[in-house]
Amino acid sequence: MKEKKTLPDELLTVLQQLTMNGDIKMAGIALKLYLVRCWKMEGKEATELTRRWFRKHYPKHLAIYLKKRYG
Image (cartoon, rainbow, N blue to C red; front, side, top):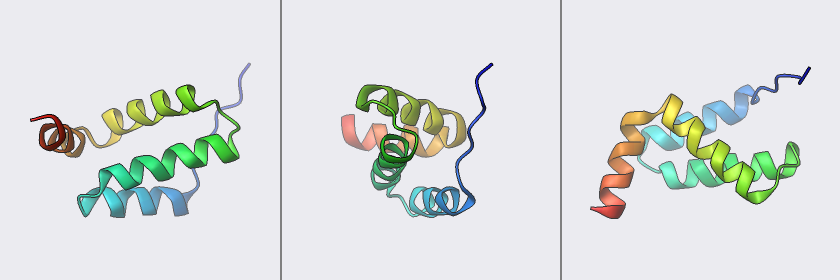
């Protein structure tokens, strides 16, 4: 059985602050780097998990970001 990993509270706080301030791209970069460096994930796997995490926890902010970026 796989061990369920959780993100540290400090990282969650940083991700929340960045997202609420409209800098969701920087929050995504921070989360992806954490997954690659600390959880030893491959780049594509970390990218997909980052996308899923933001879709689950910040769907409205993600929609606003995607609308601005892609029109």
